[in-house]
Length: 111
Ligand SMILES: [Zn+2]
Image (cartoon, rainbow, N blue to C red; front, side):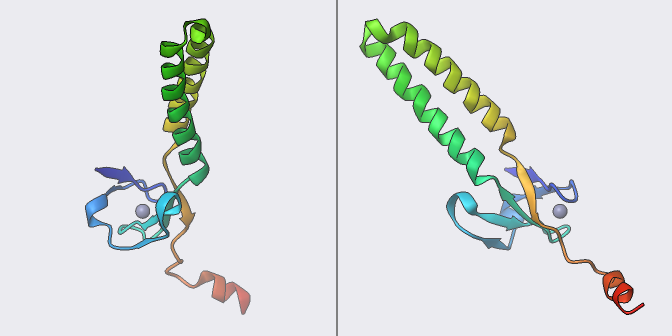
């Protein structure tokens, strides 16, 4: 599995990532190219999980109760679309940009 760093756009091999922090949905990894901290949106991950279970629940409901079938199919389609959208939105973003190597900020301060 490989990811693309949202900061330097280089591909990252998950197995080569050495620095991690946080747990579960809020877990972050550090890019070994540019040293930026990268994370996934916990909110998107939550929406993704909820819509997935909603699709499953509605499919079961529609299968079991014939009178709710049309309604549950419509609901399942909507939940499925939410799942798809959240899946595309579920990518890495830069949590913390790497520290600047040069000290231009320092110099500006004392000018
Ligand atoms: Zn990077």
